[in-house]
Image (cartoon, rainbow, N blue to C red):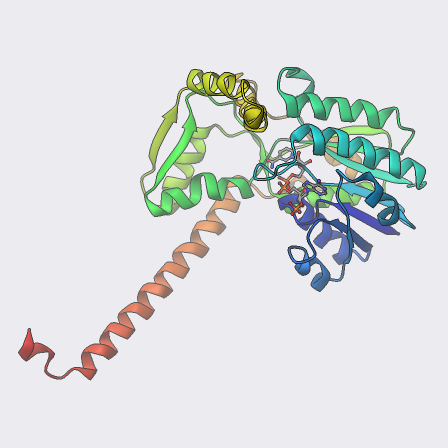
Length: 328
Ligand SMILES: NC(=O)c1ccc[n+]([C@@H]2O[C@H](COP(=O)([O-])OP(=O)(O)OC[C@H]3O[C@@H](n4cnc5c(N)ncnc54)[C@H](OP(=O)(O)O)[C@@H]3O)[C@@H](O)[C@H]2O)c1
């Protein structure tokens, strides 16, 4: 079975590619930059140049492909907008997959997408789910909450470095999941006909509030967080102002996501039925405690080693300068 992974250089996509290669699938990745994707080639994937926003690049990439796993999304740092990548680009990918006779299509959506028609990314996810359902493809939609990997930059590093941790004044609890676990569900779909033409939530073991995550990081790192709260009202005003300028549309669309956080509705879902259908054991899913514990103990060990090396170098230097005491 040949898989085409789109977005394989991303946080989730790379875990999907790793898992697929480990399980013996022939993996092809559609990439915008060969240089950025060099690690995928080293892992054993075939790289094909392409871009969702250039539909003419998709046909060649899909030749001989049995299944597509789409883990792409617009980058906040890119000039391409959410609408161009996540809507127009995905429509092109789905249409090209139908044309190429692809047998399976896995799409990552977001939990509760239908509840926020005013939030562009949520509305686009909901519309893509509908478009897929009507495409005739044997699709599976996996609706995600948040990634544990994102918490390192948001909380872990600033807390360790004594930098401010920026949080919104209100925030919905989120059932974060390790992307390695999400990848396990995605690859599993391919061998389970009962997951065809169905939508499943794929979320972590429980929903965590911002305050709970900060307290956990403080406990595991032994450091106190410097928390700076941004009022939701301020973010709403900035968003409205940005809508006046075309260059600000992309940022405004992203800021709209604060409405999801401000709603107080948890990004969470029951998972018992999902584990049953997928034949997976919930005990194998990484908890947030164990994920962050592993991160902090690895970093603390590294810091201790660096401190030890620094002390050793200092001692050596002191030995080499016999007149140090007399001079000081
Ligand atoms: N992050 C979360 O917490 C979260 C939560 C719920 C759902 N999701 C969903 O999970 C999926 C993966 O998200 P992620 O956070 O792993 O994404 P990510 O790290 O931002 O990676 C995005 C990927 O999409 C690729 N891409 C962007 N524009 C493209 C284009 N025009 N043509 C082809 N490829 C393009 C990027 O390639 P380059 O390397 O070339 O930029 C990169 O590989 C998305 O569907 C996202 O909506 C994410």
